[in-house]
Amino acid sequence: MDDRPSVRARRSQGERSREAILAEAARLATVEGIDGLSIARLAQAVGMSKSGLFAHFGSKEQLQLATIENAQRIFDEHVLAPAEAARTAGERLRLLTDGYLRYVEGEFFPGGCFFASVLSEADTRPGPVRDRIVLFLDDWLGRLDSTIREAQAEGSIEADEDPADLTFELEAALYLANAQFVVSQSREVTERARRIIGRRLARA
Amino acid sequence: MDDRPSVRARRSQGERSREAILAEAARLATVEGIDGLSIARLAQAVGMSKSGLFAHFGSKEQLQLATIENAQRIFDEHVLAPAEAARTAGERLRLLTDGYLRYVEGEFFPGGCFFASVLSEADTRPGPVRDRIVLFLDDWLGRLDSTIREAQAEGSIEADEDPADLTFELEAALYLANAQFVVSQSREVTERARRIIGRRLARA
Image (cartoon, rainbow over the protein chains, first blue to last red):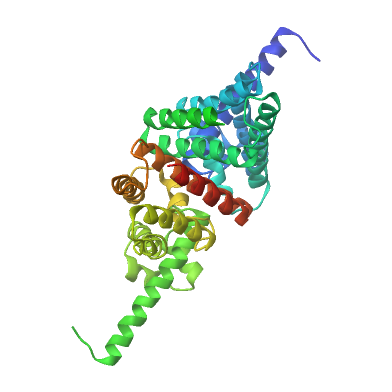
């Protein structure tokens, strides 16, 4: 590893630039679709040459997959990481659902939650992009489900709640809140989802 | 009006053909996006000449709007009309939600509910297509809300339920069921939504 300052600065600049490019790519993907995300279209949006972007990403599909990885990093940082501070599974469940609503309100992407936006486009198109989004969803829903089971084990959620049904109910409120927030741009929507989820968890 | 049999047959054939073309257009729109729905793309899909389709629809936007009207007709026939048979508002609410789930299971469109699919694409793109889809949604959510209020007036739903919150909860389950059904192609999803909505309405 070369730690001379000039090399470190160059590398770090290259990484910032890659991250900035992928953030723009993710924003574009939630408006124009991830299928519309080509190296040519992105070059136009970020004012770089096609050959420069081609050197970064190699192909449209690699660009799409790198964009998804970067969106996952943003999701991890803003939704998953804050929930790690919880001392109980019940508290973690509240932090996960509230973290998702804050991520929607944070408007990281103009088309709302990156994964909800891309899923609705890619759901009928088999391939690596669809597979990667389904993997994200499986992980997210699996995390809600296992957190509910942990909360049952610690006694903060009733043992007779069906974890899969409760996961569906929480995700349903989050998913609709995201869709309605994009259309209305109003926090009334996310506040409503917050209230409904709070009541549902209080009853569980 | 010319009622000679040959003219009636011709007209009726013309209408059937227009309907068949628009059904194909709606299927395409839920897979490739309504923005991808051009006269050229549709001509290729239905094996007609571009000039023939142009004579029918005039422009890409007119084609998109005609496709939405035709999808609305399918929605009215399969979701709204069956609920008219209800004798009480409480029963109508159950028929509306169940009708939506049967419409999802009926797979009229490969990308699931036409309106959910097109909304997630058009939500960030101002214009007549987005306006028309938002009009559909306002009508659908308004119908759930007013049916809940009627059910409260007749006493089949508790007076202390907030109609807007209950509308959100029902729509959330329907909206997520549609999205998960497209990905999993499994009735387990719609059955779960049915069970959750049934329990929620029993508690209301």
